[in-house]
Amino acid sequence: MSDARIPILLDTDIGSDIDDAVCLAYLLRQPLCELVGITTVSGMARQRAMLADAVCRAAGRDNVPIHSGAEQPLLIPQGQPEAQQAEALARFPHRTDFASNTAVEFLRQTIRSRPGEITLLTIGPLTTIGLLFAIDPEIPAMLKQLVLMSGVYTTRVAGCPVREWNTMLDPHASAVVYRAPVRPHTSIGLDVTLRCTLDAAICRARLRGGPLDVVADMAEVWFRHAGQITFHDPLAATVIFQPDLCTYEEGTVEIELLSRRVAGMAHWDPHSVEKPHRIAVDVDADRFFAHYFDVVG
Image (cartoon, rainbow, N blue to C red; front, side):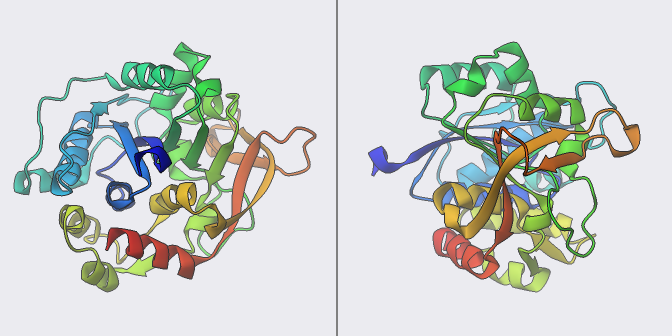
C-alpha cells in the first residue's frame, strides 16, 4: 500500500471556515494519502496548528509534522485575524509547543528531499506558499502537482461573489503562486464548490467518529452563524484521488492587483496560447458526497 500512496503537504487556515477540518479528516482517513505534513496560515497560525494536531490525534495520528506559517498577508492588512474554532481546543488533547513561522522552511526542506513526488494542497490564503515560491524559486518545478481551493472562474451560481476568500485575503501572494511554473496547476473554484453543500442537521448526523468528533465540535462554532457546510476544501482534496469527480478546462489565470476594489479576483482566459492552469468547471456532487463519506466512514 505504501508505494501506491500519494505524498501530500497540506497548507490550511483551519479554525475559521469548518470545511478545512472536514478536509483534514478526509485526508487522515484516505488510505491512498501519505500526509507528509501540515502547515497553517493566517491570523492565530499557532492556534490553527493546535487545531490540526487535535484532529490528527483523534485519528490516532500524533506523528504528522505540523508547522505554523505566516500570520500577516504580504502587503495588505489581515482580513482574518482570528481562528474562532480554537475554543474547541479546551475539550481535546493537542500539542501547544508550536514555534512561530516555521512553515516555509519545513515546506522547502520537505519538497527538496523528495523532488517530483509531493502534491501540495492549499486550502487557505496563499501567503505561506507565496513566500515559499519567492524565497526558493526552484521549488515550484520540484512539485509533482499543485492543487488549490481558490478563485472564481466560470458562470456564477446563485449568490457567488466575483472574488473568493483565499485569493482576496492575500492577492499579492496569490499572484506569485499563479505565476509559478508548476505543472499541473489545478484550481477548484468557489463557483464549483458551492454546488457541494449539506444542511447542518445532515452534517451533525454524519460527521461522527474518530477525527470527525473533533470536527463536529468545531462545527458547532461554525453553526452559530451558518446553517450549512459547503465542502469547498474537501472537494479540492478528493480530486487528487478521484479526478473525474470534476470536469476541467485549461487556460491562464491572472490575479487582479491593480484595482483595490476587486484585488484578488481571478481573471480566467481559456483562449490563451499557453495554458499553464487547469480549473474545475463542473462537479458531480452526488458522486463527491458518496466518495467522501465512503472514505471517512
